[in-house]
Image (cartoon, rainbow, N blue to C red):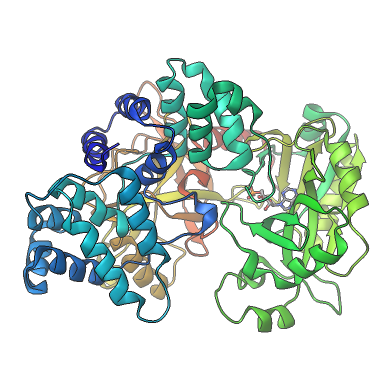
Length: 575
Ligand code: AMP
Protein backbone atom coordinates (compact mmCIF):
# COMPACT_ATOMS: atom_id res chain seq x y z
CA UNK A 1 0.00 0.00 0.00
CA UNK A 2 1.13 3.51 -0.69
CA UNK A 3 1.85 5.52 2.44
CA UNK A 4 -0.24 8.37 1.00
CA UNK A 5 -3.20 6.00 0.88
CA UNK A 6 -2.72 5.24 4.58
CA UNK A 7 -2.53 8.91 5.54
CA UNK A 8 -5.70 9.43 3.49
CA UNK A 9 -7.34 7.00 5.91
CA UNK A 10 -5.78 8.88 8.84
CA UNK A 11 -7.45 12.00 7.51
CA UNK A 12 -10.82 10.23 7.46
CA UNK A 13 -10.31 8.92 10.99
CA UNK A 14 -9.40 12.35 12.24
CA UNK A 15 -12.54 13.86 10.77
CA UNK A 16 -14.93 11.61 12.67
CA UNK A 17 -15.81 11.39 16.32
CA UNK A 18 -18.33 8.58 15.87
CA UNK A 19 -17.16 5.16 16.98
CA UNK A 20 -19.19 3.28 14.40
CA UNK A 21 -17.75 5.35 11.61
CA UNK A 22 -14.25 4.65 12.92
CA UNK A 23 -14.92 0.90 12.83
CA UNK A 24 -16.14 1.17 9.29
CA UNK A 25 -13.18 3.28 8.08
CA UNK A 26 -10.68 0.93 9.72
CA UNK A 27 -12.44 -2.16 8.36
CA UNK A 28 -12.08 -0.74 4.85
CA UNK A 29 -8.42 0.01 5.52
CA UNK A 30 -7.77 -3.52 6.82
CA UNK A 31 -9.52 -5.04 3.83
CA UNK A 32 -7.33 -3.12 1.48
CA UNK A 33 -4.10 -4.00 3.29
CA UNK A 34 -1.88 -6.93 2.32
CA UNK A 35 -0.70 -9.46 4.90
CA UNK A 36 2.77 -7.97 4.47
CA UNK A 37 1.66 -4.48 5.54
CA UNK A 38 -1.20 -5.08 7.96
CA UNK A 39 0.87 -5.24 11.17
CA UNK A 40 2.73 -2.05 10.27
CA UNK A 41 -0.53 -0.33 9.39
CA UNK A 42 -2.02 -1.21 12.76
CA UNK A 43 1.03 -0.11 14.74
CA UNK A 44 1.25 3.17 12.81
CA UNK A 45 -2.48 3.93 13.27
CA UNK A 46 -1.97 3.54 16.99
CA UNK A 47 0.97 5.92 16.93
CA UNK A 48 3.64 3.26 17.52
CA UNK A 49 6.20 1.18 15.63
CA UNK A 50 5.72 -2.02 17.60
CA UNK A 51 3.51 -3.13 20.49
CA UNK A 52 4.36 -1.27 23.72
CA UNK A 53 6.14 -4.30 25.25
CA UNK A 54 8.93 -3.91 22.70
CA UNK A 55 9.76 -0.56 24.34
CA UNK A 56 10.79 1.18 21.13
CA UNK A 57 10.79 4.96 21.19
CA UNK A 58 11.25 7.56 18.45
CA UNK A 59 13.37 9.77 20.72
CA UNK A 60 12.40 12.86 18.75
CA UNK A 61 11.75 16.26 20.28
CA UNK A 62 10.03 19.35 18.87
CA UNK A 63 13.42 20.94 18.49
CA UNK A 64 14.80 18.10 16.37
CA UNK A 65 11.69 17.97 14.25
CA UNK A 66 11.90 21.72 13.59
CA UNK A 67 15.47 21.25 12.40
CA UNK A 68 14.44 18.38 10.13
CA UNK A 69 11.57 20.42 8.73
CA UNK A 70 13.89 23.30 8.10
CA UNK A 71 16.30 20.99 6.25
CA UNK A 72 13.62 19.28 4.22
CA UNK A 73 11.83 22.46 3.20
CA UNK A 74 15.05 24.41 2.79
CA UNK A 75 13.70 27.24 4.88
CA UNK A 76 15.37 28.77 7.92
CA UNK A 77 14.38 27.41 11.35
CA UNK A 78 12.99 30.87 12.10
CA UNK A 79 10.45 30.40 9.35
CA UNK A 80 9.48 26.94 10.64
CA UNK A 81 9.04 28.35 14.14
CA UNK A 82 6.94 31.17 12.79
CA UNK A 83 4.54 28.79 11.04
CA UNK A 84 4.51 26.61 14.17
CA UNK A 85 3.49 29.61 16.30
CA UNK A 86 0.65 30.31 13.89
CA UNK A 87 -0.64 26.73 13.61
CA UNK A 88 0.22 25.48 17.11
CA UNK A 89 0.84 22.04 15.60
CA UNK A 90 4.02 20.77 13.99
CA UNK A 91 1.93 18.45 11.80
CA UNK A 92 0.17 21.40 10.19
CA UNK A 93 3.49 23.21 10.05
CA UNK A 94 4.97 20.34 8.05
CA UNK A 95 1.90 20.29 5.83
CA UNK A 96 2.24 23.95 5.04
CA UNK A 97 5.99 23.95 4.45
CA UNK A 98 6.26 20.79 2.41
CA UNK A 99 3.81 21.37 -0.38
CA UNK A 100 3.61 19.56 -3.72
CA UNK A 101 6.11 16.80 -3.21
CA UNK A 102 5.96 13.25 -4.47
CA UNK A 103 3.71 10.50 -3.22
CA UNK A 104 5.94 7.60 -4.11
CA UNK A 105 6.55 6.21 -0.64
CA UNK A 106 5.16 2.80 0.32
CA UNK A 107 3.95 1.95 3.83
CA UNK A 108 6.80 -0.55 4.17
CA UNK A 109 9.44 1.99 3.25
CA UNK A 110 8.00 4.72 5.50
CA UNK A 111 7.83 2.21 8.35
CA UNK A 112 11.42 1.07 7.82
CA UNK A 113 12.72 4.60 7.72
CA UNK A 114 10.85 5.55 10.88
CA UNK A 115 12.26 2.43 12.53
CA UNK A 116 15.78 3.44 11.48
CA UNK A 117 15.27 6.81 13.14
CA UNK A 118 14.05 5.17 16.34
CA UNK A 119 17.03 2.79 16.39
CA UNK A 120 19.56 5.56 15.93
CA UNK A 121 21.13 6.22 19.31
CA UNK A 122 24.50 6.92 20.91
CA UNK A 123 27.00 9.63 20.12
CA UNK A 124 26.27 11.78 17.09
CA UNK A 125 22.78 10.31 16.94
CA UNK A 126 21.02 13.68 17.08
CA UNK A 127 22.44 14.84 13.76
CA UNK A 128 21.83 11.43 12.24
CA UNK A 129 18.21 11.38 13.38
CA UNK A 130 17.60 14.84 11.93
CA UNK A 131 19.13 13.90 8.62
CA UNK A 132 17.19 10.61 8.35
CA UNK A 133 13.95 12.39 9.12
CA UNK A 134 14.56 15.27 6.74
CA UNK A 135 15.36 12.74 4.00
CA UNK A 136 12.12 10.98 4.67
CA UNK A 137 10.15 14.22 4.68
CA UNK A 138 11.73 15.40 1.49
CA UNK A 139 10.03 12.67 -0.50
CA UNK A 140 6.53 13.03 0.90
CA UNK A 141 3.36 14.92 0.02
CA UNK A 142 2.10 17.56 2.44
CA UNK A 143 -0.49 15.21 3.88
CA UNK A 144 2.06 12.48 4.50
CA UNK A 145 4.42 15.01 6.07
CA UNK A 146 1.70 16.18 8.45
CA UNK A 147 1.21 12.68 9.87
CA UNK A 148 4.91 11.80 9.93
CA UNK A 149 5.59 14.95 11.94
CA UNK A 150 2.86 14.10 14.44
CA UNK A 151 3.92 10.47 14.56
CA UNK A 152 7.55 11.11 15.42
CA UNK A 153 6.47 13.33 18.31
CA UNK A 154 4.04 10.69 19.59
CA UNK A 155 1.11 12.97 18.79
CA UNK A 156 -0.82 11.10 16.16
CA UNK A 157 -3.91 10.86 18.34
CA UNK A 158 -6.30 9.22 15.96
CA UNK A 159 -8.21 7.65 18.83
CA UNK A 160 -7.61 4.08 17.63
CA UNK A 161 -7.70 2.04 20.85
CA UNK A 162 -7.14 -1.73 21.03
CA UNK A 163 -10.86 -2.60 21.27
CA UNK A 164 -11.48 -0.43 18.21
CA UNK A 165 -8.90 -2.39 16.21
CA UNK A 166 -10.43 -5.71 17.31
CA UNK A 167 -13.92 -4.57 16.42
CA UNK A 168 -12.76 -3.30 13.01
CA UNK A 169 -10.86 -6.52 12.27
CA UNK A 170 -14.00 -8.54 12.94
CA UNK A 171 -16.03 -6.14 10.81
CA UNK A 172 -13.49 -6.40 7.98
CA UNK A 173 -14.34 -10.12 7.83
CA UNK A 174 -18.03 -9.22 7.73
CA UNK A 175 -18.78 -10.78 11.13
CA UNK A 176 -18.63 -8.76 14.32
CA UNK A 177 -19.11 -12.00 16.22
CA UNK A 178 -15.48 -12.90 15.48
CA UNK A 179 -14.30 -10.24 17.90
CA UNK A 180 -14.32 -12.60 20.86
CA UNK A 181 -11.94 -15.08 19.26
CA UNK A 182 -9.69 -12.29 17.99
CA UNK A 183 -9.63 -10.89 21.50
CA UNK A 184 -8.68 -14.27 22.98
CA UNK A 185 -5.66 -14.37 20.68
CA UNK A 186 -4.79 -10.77 21.52
CA UNK A 187 -5.05 -11.44 25.25
CA UNK A 188 -2.46 -14.18 24.91
CA UNK A 189 0.12 -12.30 22.81
CA UNK A 190 -0.63 -8.57 23.40
CA UNK A 191 0.29 -7.91 19.79
CA UNK A 192 -2.53 -6.69 17.54
CA UNK A 193 -0.19 -6.66 14.54
CA UNK A 194 0.49 -10.36 15.00
CA UNK A 195 -3.21 -11.17 15.39
CA UNK A 196 -4.10 -9.23 12.23
CA UNK A 197 -1.27 -10.71 10.21
CA UNK A 198 -2.30 -14.21 11.26
CA UNK A 199 -5.89 -13.41 10.29
CA UNK A 200 -4.87 -12.28 6.82
CA UNK A 201 -2.42 -15.09 6.24
CA UNK A 202 -4.24 -18.02 7.83
CA UNK A 203 -7.81 -16.86 8.44
CA UNK A 204 -9.67 -17.60 11.66
CA UNK A 205 -8.22 -21.12 11.82
CA UNK A 206 -4.80 -19.55 12.24
CA UNK A 207 -6.05 -17.11 14.86
CA UNK A 208 -7.65 -19.94 16.83
CA UNK A 209 -4.31 -21.70 16.87
CA UNK A 210 -2.38 -18.75 18.36
CA UNK A 211 -0.95 -19.85 21.69
CA UNK A 212 0.78 -18.37 24.68
CA UNK A 213 4.53 -17.93 24.03
CA UNK A 214 7.46 -16.99 26.20
CA UNK A 215 8.49 -13.45 25.19
CA UNK A 216 4.97 -12.24 24.38
CA UNK A 217 3.33 -10.83 27.51
CA UNK A 218 -0.11 -12.13 28.40
CA UNK A 219 -2.65 -9.42 29.17
CA UNK A 220 -3.11 -9.62 32.89
CA UNK A 221 -6.11 -10.91 34.78
CA UNK A 222 -7.74 -8.39 37.11
CA UNK A 223 -9.95 -8.48 40.20
CA UNK A 224 -13.58 -7.68 40.73
CA UNK A 225 -14.59 -6.41 44.15
CA UNK A 226 -17.27 -7.05 46.75
CA UNK A 227 -17.85 -5.28 50.08
CA UNK A 228 -17.55 -8.27 52.45
CA UNK A 229 -16.15 -11.75 53.06
CA UNK A 230 -19.72 -13.07 53.28
CA UNK A 231 -20.30 -12.04 49.68
CA UNK A 232 -17.05 -13.65 48.60
CA UNK A 233 -18.22 -16.99 49.98
CA UNK A 234 -21.72 -16.49 48.59
CA UNK A 235 -20.26 -15.98 45.13
CA UNK A 236 -17.47 -18.56 45.23
CA UNK A 237 -18.25 -21.18 47.82
CA UNK A 238 -15.03 -22.81 48.95
CA UNK A 239 -12.24 -20.59 47.71
CA UNK A 240 -8.54 -19.85 47.81
CA UNK A 241 -7.68 -16.69 49.73
CA UNK A 242 -4.36 -14.96 49.09
CA UNK A 243 -2.69 -11.97 50.71
CA UNK A 244 -2.99 -8.80 48.64
CA UNK A 245 0.49 -7.31 48.41
CA UNK A 246 0.85 -3.62 47.69
CA UNK A 247 3.83 -3.59 45.35
CA UNK A 248 4.56 -3.86 41.64
CA UNK A 249 3.04 -6.59 39.59
CA UNK A 250 5.45 -8.45 37.36
CA UNK A 251 4.89 -11.08 34.72
CA UNK A 252 8.11 -13.04 34.40
CA UNK A 253 9.08 -14.85 31.22
CA UNK A 254 11.89 -17.36 31.55
CA UNK A 255 13.59 -19.14 28.69
CA UNK A 256 16.69 -20.83 30.03
CA UNK A 257 18.98 -18.03 31.09
CA UNK A 258 16.93 -15.37 29.33
CA UNK A 259 14.58 -13.63 31.71
CA UNK A 260 12.16 -10.87 30.77
CA UNK A 261 9.68 -9.01 32.90
CA UNK A 262 6.60 -7.02 32.09
CA UNK A 263 4.60 -4.52 34.12
CA UNK A 264 0.86 -4.47 34.53
CA UNK A 265 0.51 -2.37 31.39
CA UNK A 266 2.91 -4.73 29.62
CA UNK A 267 5.98 -2.57 29.43
CA UNK A 268 9.31 -4.30 29.72
CA UNK A 269 10.66 -3.72 33.23
CA UNK A 270 13.44 -6.32 33.43
CA UNK A 271 16.13 -3.74 34.24
CA UNK A 272 14.32 -2.75 37.43
CA UNK A 273 14.60 -6.15 39.12
CA UNK A 274 18.14 -7.57 38.97
CA UNK A 275 17.84 -9.65 42.16
CA UNK A 276 14.58 -11.21 41.01
CA UNK A 277 16.07 -11.95 37.57
CA UNK A 278 18.99 -13.75 39.22
CA UNK A 279 16.71 -15.74 41.51
CA UNK A 280 14.48 -16.80 38.60
CA UNK A 281 17.49 -18.17 36.71
CA UNK A 282 18.63 -20.33 39.59
CA UNK A 283 15.50 -21.14 41.57
CA UNK A 284 12.67 -21.66 39.10
CA UNK A 285 13.13 -25.22 38.04
CA UNK A 286 11.27 -25.14 34.70
CA UNK A 287 13.41 -24.38 31.65
CA UNK A 288 10.65 -22.28 30.18
CA UNK A 289 8.02 -20.60 32.30
CA UNK A 290 5.69 -17.63 32.60
CA UNK A 291 4.74 -16.66 36.12
CA UNK A 292 3.22 -13.68 37.83
CA UNK A 293 3.45 -12.09 41.21
CA UNK A 294 4.02 -8.94 43.18
CA UNK A 295 7.47 -7.47 43.93
CA UNK A 296 7.78 -5.68 47.21
CA UNK A 297 10.49 -3.98 49.26
CA UNK A 298 10.98 -5.68 52.61
CA UNK A 299 13.18 -5.35 55.63
CA UNK A 300 15.62 -8.27 55.62
CA UNK A 301 16.18 -8.09 59.35
CA UNK A 302 12.61 -7.86 60.57
CA UNK A 303 10.87 -9.38 57.56
CA UNK A 304 8.51 -6.39 57.52
CA UNK A 305 7.03 -5.21 54.25
CA UNK A 306 7.63 -1.64 53.18
CA UNK A 307 4.90 0.64 51.82
CA UNK A 308 4.32 1.02 48.10
CA UNK A 309 6.21 4.35 47.90
CA UNK A 310 9.46 2.54 48.71
CA UNK A 311 8.95 -0.24 46.20
CA UNK A 312 8.02 2.42 43.64
CA UNK A 313 11.55 3.85 43.75
CA UNK A 314 12.60 1.01 41.48
CA UNK A 315 10.89 2.84 38.65
CA UNK A 316 13.98 4.63 37.54
CA UNK A 317 16.67 4.25 34.93
CA UNK A 318 19.82 4.60 37.02
CA UNK A 319 21.07 3.58 40.43
CA UNK A 320 19.09 0.36 40.50
CA UNK A 321 21.89 -1.77 41.95
CA UNK A 322 22.43 0.61 44.88
CA UNK A 323 18.71 0.60 45.50
CA UNK A 324 18.67 -3.19 45.35
CA UNK A 325 21.16 -3.19 48.23
CA UNK A 326 19.30 -0.60 50.27
CA UNK A 327 15.81 -1.95 49.65
CA UNK A 328 15.97 -5.50 48.35
CA UNK A 329 12.77 -6.87 46.91
CA UNK A 330 10.89 -10.04 47.56
CA UNK A 331 8.80 -11.60 44.84
CA UNK A 332 5.53 -13.19 45.94
CA UNK A 333 4.53 -15.50 43.11
CA UNK A 334 0.79 -15.98 42.73
CA UNK A 335 0.23 -17.34 39.22
CA UNK A 336 1.66 -19.79 36.75
CA UNK A 337 0.65 -19.29 33.12
CA UNK A 338 3.03 -21.56 31.28
CA UNK A 339 5.63 -24.17 32.07
CA UNK A 340 7.72 -26.32 29.73
CA UNK A 341 5.41 -26.43 26.72
CA UNK A 342 2.24 -26.51 28.75
CA UNK A 343 -0.29 -23.72 28.70
CA UNK A 344 -1.51 -23.35 32.27
CA UNK A 345 -3.92 -20.45 31.58
CA UNK A 346 -6.66 -22.95 30.78
CA UNK A 347 -6.08 -25.13 33.81
CA UNK A 348 -7.81 -24.57 37.15
CA UNK A 349 -6.39 -22.37 39.89
CA UNK A 350 -5.79 -25.45 42.02
CA UNK A 351 -3.63 -27.05 39.30
CA UNK A 352 -1.78 -23.84 38.55
CA UNK A 353 -0.99 -23.23 42.19
CA UNK A 354 0.22 -26.77 42.85
CA UNK A 355 2.56 -26.64 39.85
CA UNK A 356 3.74 -23.13 40.78
CA UNK A 357 4.73 -24.27 44.26
CA UNK A 358 6.56 -27.27 42.83
CA UNK A 359 8.66 -25.07 40.55
CA UNK A 360 10.05 -22.77 43.24
CA UNK A 361 13.21 -24.07 44.93
CA UNK A 362 13.60 -22.59 48.37
CA UNK A 363 15.42 -19.24 48.17
CA UNK A 364 15.44 -15.86 49.90
CA UNK A 365 13.86 -13.84 47.05
CA UNK A 366 10.98 -15.78 45.52
CA UNK A 367 8.24 -17.38 47.52
CA UNK A 368 4.65 -18.36 46.78
CA UNK A 369 2.07 -15.80 47.91
CA UNK A 370 0.43 -16.64 51.24
CA UNK A 371 -2.67 -18.71 50.60
CA UNK A 372 -5.26 -20.78 52.37
CA UNK A 373 -8.50 -22.44 51.34
CA UNK A 374 -11.78 -21.88 53.16
CA UNK A 375 -15.54 -21.60 52.92
CA UNK A 376 -15.85 -19.68 56.15
CA UNK A 377 -16.22 -15.86 55.99
CA UNK A 378 -15.08 -15.59 59.62
CA UNK A 379 -11.73 -17.16 58.71
CA UNK A 380 -11.34 -14.62 55.93
CA UNK A 381 -12.15 -11.74 58.29
CA UNK A 382 -9.60 -12.91 60.85
CA UNK A 383 -6.90 -13.26 58.24
CA UNK A 384 -7.89 -9.94 56.69
CA UNK A 385 -7.50 -8.03 59.98
CA UNK A 386 -4.16 -9.64 60.65
CA UNK A 387 -3.00 -8.92 57.10
CA UNK A 388 -3.91 -5.23 57.37
CA UNK A 389 -1.97 -5.06 60.62
CA UNK A 390 1.11 -6.43 58.86
CA UNK A 391 0.89 -3.70 56.21
CA UNK A 392 -0.80 -5.76 53.50
CA UNK A 393 -3.55 -4.25 51.42
CA UNK A 394 -6.22 -6.85 52.00
CA UNK A 395 -6.98 -10.18 50.37
CA UNK A 396 -7.69 -11.60 46.94
CA UNK A 397 -10.02 -14.60 46.73
CA UNK A 398 -9.52 -16.89 43.75
CA UNK A 399 -12.03 -19.37 42.41
CA UNK A 400 -10.53 -22.83 42.73
CA UNK A 401 -11.86 -24.26 39.49
CA UNK A 402 -11.41 -21.17 37.29
CA UNK A 403 -8.87 -20.72 34.47
CA UNK A 404 -6.54 -17.70 34.31
CA UNK A 405 -8.74 -15.02 32.69
CA UNK A 406 -6.20 -13.25 30.46
CA UNK A 407 -7.14 -9.62 29.81
CA UNK A 408 -10.32 -9.82 31.86
CA UNK A 409 -11.72 -8.48 35.08
CA UNK A 410 -14.27 -10.93 36.43
CA UNK A 411 -15.39 -12.75 39.54
CA UNK A 412 -12.75 -15.48 39.23
CA UNK A 413 -10.64 -13.10 41.31
CA UNK A 414 -12.26 -10.95 43.98
CA UNK A 415 -10.43 -8.39 46.07
CA UNK A 416 -11.36 -7.12 49.47
CA UNK A 417 -9.66 -3.98 50.66
CA UNK A 418 -9.82 -1.93 53.79
CA UNK A 419 -12.76 0.38 54.20
CA UNK A 420 -12.41 3.59 56.13
CA UNK A 421 -15.18 5.52 57.71
CA UNK A 422 -16.48 8.18 55.33
CA UNK A 423 -14.19 7.05 52.60
CA UNK A 424 -14.77 4.77 49.68
CA UNK A 425 -13.40 1.29 50.31
CA UNK A 426 -11.33 1.54 47.20
CA UNK A 427 -9.43 4.23 45.38
CA UNK A 428 -10.56 5.16 41.89
CA UNK A 429 -8.21 5.50 38.95
CA UNK A 430 -9.28 8.25 36.57
CA UNK A 431 -7.84 9.24 33.23
CA UNK A 432 -7.08 12.94 32.80
CA UNK A 433 -8.98 14.38 29.83
CA UNK A 434 -8.53 18.11 30.48
CA UNK A 435 -7.56 20.68 33.06
CA UNK A 436 -8.77 23.96 34.57
CA UNK A 437 -6.34 26.80 34.98
CA UNK A 438 -7.45 27.60 38.50
CA UNK A 439 -8.16 30.87 40.23
CA UNK A 440 -6.60 32.84 43.06
CA UNK A 441 -3.56 31.28 44.68
CA UNK A 442 -3.74 28.27 42.34
CA UNK A 443 -3.51 30.38 39.19
CA UNK A 444 0.24 30.68 39.52
CA UNK A 445 0.78 26.97 38.83
CA UNK A 446 -1.29 27.10 35.67
CA UNK A 447 -3.32 24.07 36.74
CA UNK A 448 -5.98 24.29 39.43
CA UNK A 449 -7.90 21.09 38.82
CA UNK A 450 -8.03 18.11 36.50
CA UNK A 451 -11.01 16.73 34.66
CA UNK A 452 -11.00 12.99 35.34
CA UNK A 453 -12.82 10.32 33.40
CA UNK A 454 -13.45 6.61 33.70
CA UNK A 455 -13.33 4.12 30.86
CA UNK A 456 -16.44 2.86 29.12
CA UNK A 457 -15.57 -0.53 27.67
CA UNK A 458 -18.74 -0.75 25.63
CA UNK A 459 -18.00 2.33 23.57
CA UNK A 460 -14.20 2.39 24.05
CA UNK A 461 -14.50 5.97 25.29
CA UNK A 462 -13.87 8.03 28.42
CA UNK A 463 -16.73 9.50 30.46
CA UNK A 464 -16.12 12.19 33.04
CA UNK A 465 -16.64 11.45 36.70
CA UNK A 466 -14.81 14.13 38.65
CA UNK A 467 -12.93 17.40 38.91
CA UNK A 468 -9.83 16.70 40.99
CA UNK A 469 -8.37 19.82 42.58
CA UNK A 470 -6.71 18.60 45.77
CA UNK A 471 -4.12 16.10 46.87
CA UNK A 472 -1.27 17.47 44.74
CA UNK A 473 1.64 19.50 46.08
CA UNK A 474 2.58 22.83 44.53
CA UNK A 475 5.48 21.21 42.70
CA UNK A 476 3.20 18.52 41.40
CA UNK A 477 0.78 21.09 40.00
CA UNK A 478 3.62 22.79 38.13
CA UNK A 479 4.83 19.43 36.87
CA UNK A 480 1.30 18.52 35.77
CA UNK A 481 1.10 21.73 33.77
CA UNK A 482 4.26 20.82 31.87
CA UNK A 483 3.21 17.25 31.23
CA UNK A 484 -0.35 18.07 30.23
CA UNK A 485 0.64 20.91 27.90
CA UNK A 486 2.66 18.31 26.03
CA UNK A 487 -0.54 16.44 25.17
CA UNK A 488 -2.93 19.40 24.88
CA UNK A 489 -5.36 19.33 21.98
CA UNK A 490 -7.60 21.98 20.50
CA UNK A 491 -10.86 20.13 20.81
CA UNK A 492 -12.37 17.48 22.95
CA UNK A 493 -10.75 14.15 22.03
CA UNK A 494 -13.05 11.88 19.97
CA UNK A 495 -12.90 9.23 22.69
CA UNK A 496 -14.04 11.64 25.40
CA UNK A 497 -17.64 12.24 26.41
CA UNK A 498 -18.14 15.32 28.58
CA UNK A 499 -20.65 18.07 29.30
CA UNK A 500 -18.10 20.05 31.28
CA UNK A 501 -15.72 22.21 29.23
CA UNK A 502 -12.27 22.39 30.83
CA UNK A 503 -9.94 25.31 29.97
CA UNK A 504 -7.62 22.93 28.17
CA UNK A 505 -8.47 19.55 26.64
CA UNK A 506 -5.81 16.89 26.65
CA UNK A 507 -5.42 13.54 24.97
CA UNK A 508 -6.58 10.78 27.33
CA UNK A 509 -3.19 9.36 28.24
CA UNK A 510 -2.43 9.72 31.95
CA UNK A 511 -4.06 8.06 34.91
CA UNK A 512 -4.16 9.35 38.49
CA UNK A 513 -5.49 7.60 41.57
CA UNK A 514 -8.02 9.43 43.72
CA UNK A 515 -9.88 8.75 46.93
CA UNK A 516 -13.29 10.16 47.56
CA UNK A 517 -15.90 10.17 50.30
CA UNK A 518 -18.56 8.57 48.21
CA UNK A 519 -20.10 8.30 44.80
CA UNK A 520 -23.09 10.52 44.12
CA UNK A 521 -25.40 11.13 41.17
CA UNK A 522 -24.80 14.28 39.15
CA UNK A 523 -26.00 15.86 35.90
CA UNK A 524 -22.54 17.37 35.37
CA UNK A 525 -20.83 14.09 34.59
CA UNK A 526 -21.32 11.59 31.79
CA UNK A 527 -20.16 8.37 33.51
CA UNK A 528 -23.15 6.03 33.74
CA UNK A 529 -25.53 8.72 32.46
CA UNK A 530 -29.17 7.57 32.55
CA UNK A 531 -32.09 8.63 30.36
CA UNK A 532 -32.56 11.82 32.33
CA UNK A 533 -28.92 12.69 31.74
CA UNK A 534 -27.84 12.05 35.35
CA UNK A 535 -24.42 10.43 35.68
CA UNK A 536 -22.14 9.43 38.56
CA UNK A 537 -19.62 11.68 40.30
CA UNK A 538 -17.00 11.43 43.04
CA UNK A 539 -17.70 13.45 46.17
CA UNK A 540 -14.68 15.23 47.71
CA UNK A 541 -12.10 13.65 45.45
CA UNK A 542 -8.41 14.01 46.28
CA UNK A 543 -5.44 12.66 44.43
CA UNK A 544 -3.19 10.02 45.98
CA UNK A 545 0.34 10.11 44.53
CA UNK A 546 1.14 11.41 41.10
CA UNK A 547 0.59 10.20 37.54
CA UNK A 548 0.44 6.38 37.47
CA UNK A 549 3.18 5.33 35.11
CA UNK A 550 2.05 1.71 35.39
CA UNK A 551 -1.43 2.32 34.02
CA UNK A 552 -2.68 2.93 30.52
CA UNK A 553 -5.76 5.10 29.95
CA UNK A 554 -7.87 1.97 29.53
CA UNK A 555 -6.68 0.81 32.96
CA UNK A 556 -8.65 3.60 34.61
CA UNK A 557 -11.64 2.26 36.49
CA UNK A 558 -14.58 1.52 34.26
CA UNK A 559 -18.04 3.04 34.23
CA UNK A 560 -19.34 -0.39 35.18
CA UNK A 561 -17.15 -0.46 38.28
CA UNK A 562 -18.23 3.03 39.34
CA UNK A 563 -21.85 1.90 39.20
CA UNK A 564 -20.98 -1.26 41.15
CA UNK A 565 -19.08 0.67 43.83
CA UNK A 566 -21.98 3.08 44.09
CA UNK A 567 -24.38 0.15 44.58
CA UNK A 568 -22.07 -1.45 47.13
CA UNK A 569 -21.63 1.65 49.26
CA UNK A 570 -25.33 1.50 49.99
CA UNK A 571 -24.85 -1.96 51.47
CA UNK A 572 -21.71 -1.38 53.55
CA UNK A 573 -22.17 -0.73 57.22
CA UNK A 574 -19.64 1.79 58.41
CA UNK A 575 -18.06 1.74 61.84
P1 AMP B 1 -6.23 -3.39 42.16
O1 AMP B 1 -5.06 -2.70 41.48
O2 AMP B 1 -6.64 -2.80 43.45
O3 AMP B 1 -7.37 -3.64 41.20
O4 AMP B 1 -5.73 -4.86 42.56
C1 AMP B 1 -5.19 -5.72 41.65
C2 AMP B 1 -3.70 -5.75 41.84
O5 AMP B 1 -3.37 -6.30 43.11
C3 AMP B 1 -3.02 -6.68 40.88
O6 AMP B 1 -2.78 -6.05 39.65
C4 AMP B 1 -1.73 -7.02 41.59
O7 AMP B 1 -0.73 -6.08 41.27
C5 AMP B 1 -2.05 -6.82 43.06
N1 AMP B 1 -1.99 -8.04 43.86
C6 AMP B 1 -1.39 -8.13 45.06
N2 AMP B 1 -1.49 -9.35 45.57
C7 AMP B 1 -2.16 -10.11 44.67
C8 AMP B 1 -2.57 -11.46 44.63
N3 AMP B 1 -2.31 -12.31 45.62
N4 AMP B 1 -3.24 -11.87 43.53
C9 AMP B 1 -3.52 -11.03 42.52
N5 AMP B 1 -3.17 -9.73 42.52
C10 AMP B 1 -2.48 -9.26 43.58
